[in-house]
Every structure is written in C-alpha cells, then in structure tokens.
Length: 190
View 1: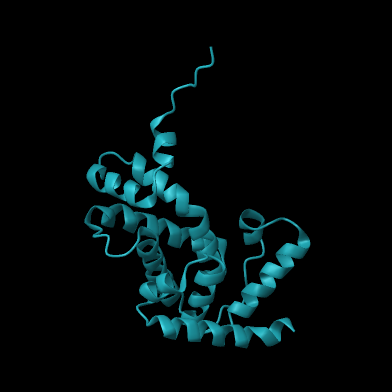
View 2: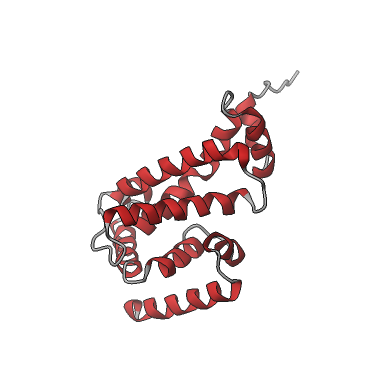
C-alpha cells in the first residue's frame, strides 16, 4: 500500500500564494513567524540579486536585505494590501537602498563592484562573471532612478506597472526612462 507521508506546515505554506501568506502572517506576527519566513524565503534570493546589482556589492546588499526583512516583519501586520506584496516589498527595498546610498554618500557613481560578490550570487564561469561586472559598471553610469528602473525590470523581472507604483511615477514615464536608459547603455555593448 502506497501511502504518502504527511507534509509539514512549511511545505503546506509553500504552496500558498503571496496574498494567502500575507493574510496568515498578519494574523500571526509577531508571535508565530512561519508564514512570514516562507514568504521572505520565496523572495529573498531575487531581492538579494536585485540589491546587489543596484548597490554594486554583496555586502551592502546583504545589509539592505536584512533591513528590508526587518521592515517587512514590523510592517506586515499593518500592510493594507493596496498594492501586491511584491510591489510593497520592492518599494521598501528601493527606499532602503536609497537610504543606504545616501549614507554612503555615493549616489553619483558606483566605482567598483565587489568581484567576490559574484561567486555567491552569480554563475561561476569566468565569462559570466566578466559579463556581470561589465553590466554593473554600465549600470553605475546611470542616475540612481534610471538604474533602479533597469534593475527592477531586467534583474527583478518586475512589470512596468509595479515599477511605476514602487517609484511613484506614471507608467508612461517609467517606460520612457527605461528606453532612454537602454539607449544610454547600448553604446557600451556595441
């Protein structure tokens, strides 16, 4: 007789969508964190990749992601759901990244990228690391908001509507700035 083993609560929660996990987390936090942990684990890798690209350093990205997770933990019980959880999450990540850049007094240019960063977050072939570094140097030439738009679209794979909501810009403005940013980057890759 073939019986399936009972699945644990983490596995059952992993099958739920973000909205369901948010609802459970809102009821349970701060005392029970399992739904919150599943929700954050689902988004953590993409968030870390996005922040690494935006900030140019795995170390800086780890600090920002940690702050984002804390803000989500404390803010989730009050989250109204006026936007998707993902939009809200990346809005927090954007704000935390901007705060971090302001603290670093480095918003005009990101000179270098921590080369060791890619061993942890990127594919390990030399060619892929070189391409990632080239991309980061190119992105550093964009102003912070245009860099955010490109990173959120190309790395985080957010929809233009989500990016517009995060940055509190018109949809047409985000699309136009994305195209202009790509035009600025194009000569670097020709």
